[in-house]
Image (cartoon, rainbow, N blue to C red; front, side, top):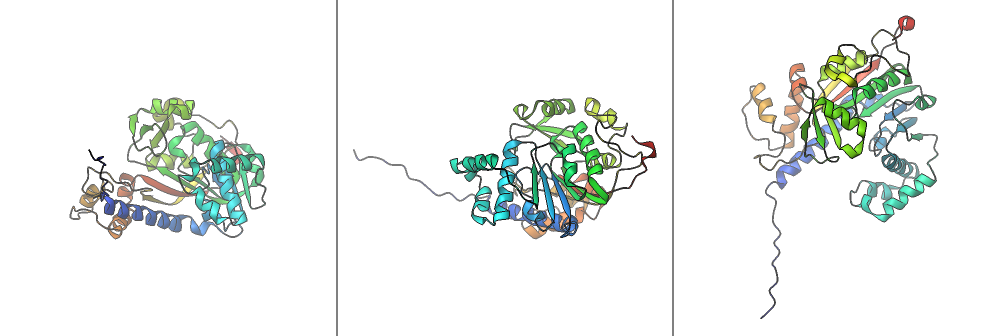
Length: 349
């Protein structure tokens, strides 16, 4: 009998158009958020700290500054960020493009590149990299800083670390310097666990379980905390505010172990914006953006309809940001720009 072979069909994904629209929308919002809140803070003579720099994804956007300090405690991420810095210094666009490819980071060539940068650390007057925690006193030797950016770190760390980092940032910044924080938000405090980063298989957990994950490290999974804007506002004013203890329990610290702080407010919020940092398709929905969009439409007294274009997504998020209450209720990410207050040290905390 003649051999029977399988027929392979190229199936069109019925959700691909929606996925493409969603992807373009989050990229457009990402550009807007950066332009609206951060771009003007990057002066040619600026000294900038990227606290918890991860893979160094923000470095190209910070490149016009005079000096950039990048701090990352995870060794592999630190080495990857070092490679990004090396590419920018040497204008190696080929390797820089490879580093953005998920397939490349699984190759032997990538591992060899990491080993090379580990054996011969990057030396540059423009970019300084530290394999350290973001509240480390070692960072102060590179300041004082005009701008500190902490991007999507606070949702993965416990309150005590957040408190110490804010104390450190206050001490690292120049008078009237700026602090930019990107974080996950929601109207109420709640927590998830993922088995790994970007898994999107969120399992809801308690605040105590989140704290245990933070203490036990990556082997325990990835904790994700959604924080109300008002809590972050309280932390920026006084990270050791006693009212936080009731909410955070054992995570709370009553004072800094390492830094001297004034009794007056540390930071004042200059501006903030709510947004979605990433869009992804949910295939049980007619449209694969976020399920809260009909809720937003209803609260804006608009017809509840499918979102079918990038322009519609952007318009809806712009309208949310024109209403302080809706900003706190909707959209899962926030960027907060705060200025350092010049406090009175006569009664330090």
